[in-house]
Amino acid sequence: MMRAWVLPILLVLCGSVVGAGLILRGDPGTAAVLLPAFVLLAAVNSPLLFPRSLGAPEAQRRSAVDGRPVVLWRPGCKYCIRLRLRLGRRAREVYWVDIWRDPAGAALVRAANGGDETVPTVLVAGRPHVNPDPAWVREQLTPTA
Image (cartoon, rainbow, N blue to C red; front, side, top):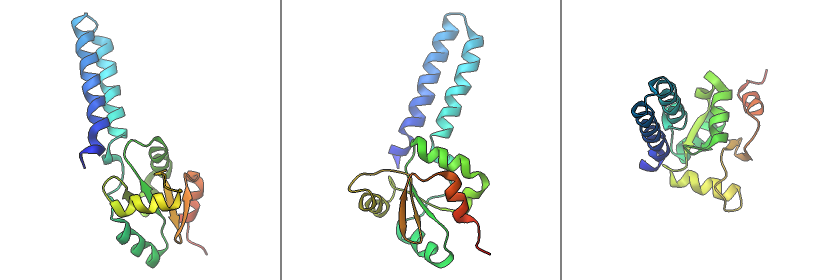
């Protein structure tokens, strides 16, 4: 749990140190620009950006019922963030599994990637797809007519 917050906390601390240094040097304007930038980076890299994670068994069970994709991800992964942002509001239609919180999810990712924890790994109909294009994932959300 704590591991997911290390990068965001470090970003806020670094931004605070840089901002304090700039203020002490007499440049509060630059500090006022940089500190919010660090806070924004921390927010983007935090688990808050992602919908609530499920355990891998529960996500797979739900996916088998309704056919929605399962995204295996980890905080701080720039490709996971890109997928989340590009899905927009539709990200809530996907089941998210944080592999740092769920050992079963981490095991699924390793099994799909030859022992590596390469994320995002998207499960569609039980088949893994490693770092797929966000547009392709959006297509998987579109119901077939």
